[in-house]
Image (cartoon, rainbow, N blue to C red; front, side):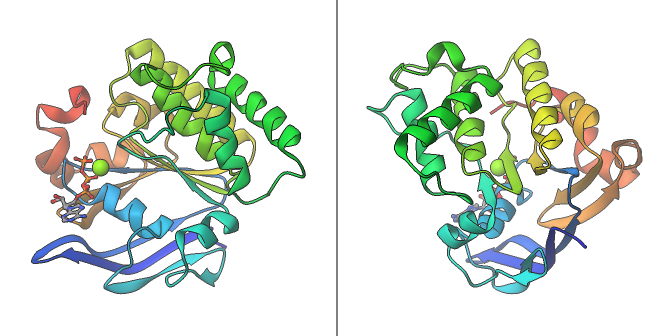
Length: 247
Ligand SMILES: Nc1ncnc2c1ncn2[C@@H]1O[C@H](COP(=O)(O)OP(=O)(O)OP(=O)(O)O)[C@@H](O)[C@H]1O
Ligand SMILES: [Mg+2]
């Protein structure tokens, strides 16, 4: 059975249809990438899956249960964890405290604060933040803020992890480290749905790729299949943004 199904999901902002009749099917254990040009509706799709937005039409199903109408908090409890494209750390808190907030609102809730801290520290170690656990987040650079977003989402112990452009703004070396972290996450039986413009990372990570353009899915399949698709090349890969796009 699929872990996540989107069935004809549509979301308009005024006259702009940001997501247009989108159907997706994410299988347990896979790394699924959502790509497409700026404004294609990728982050809006994440907001619909995590519940920050409600669709105008269509259904969202997690593990066989319709979650279209339930709150973001309930979806987090059911195992949907996410990062934000615009990083949103809690200031005046340390790195590990930020990660602990994920522990307290997630899929499995720790028995004590001490347990939450231990688990958060282990996650910091996994994502490469171990030297910074007790540092205030203010002043952290992009790479560490991206690591923190991933760590906080992981701390909710998600079954489905949504990663919105966690490679954007990273150096090649940092992006390779992020690829390694995401592979490690998948080995813990977390299903990953990721948005990215860094094509080399998508190629290296994704089992399957769906391409959005103006809110519609224009192609789906292996990276090789979609990268060779003339519609995709015209919409996206042929443009100069392709590999160099950064936010
Ligand atoms: N809250 C909102 N209100 C109005 N319009 C919105 C809102 N959120 C997104 N949009 C619009 O919907 C469209 C899709 O935006 P979205 O952020 O989903 O694109 P994206 O594929 O994530 O793009 P990017 O690659 O630039 O992050 C865009 O035209 C955007 O301006
Ligand atoms: Mg986006």
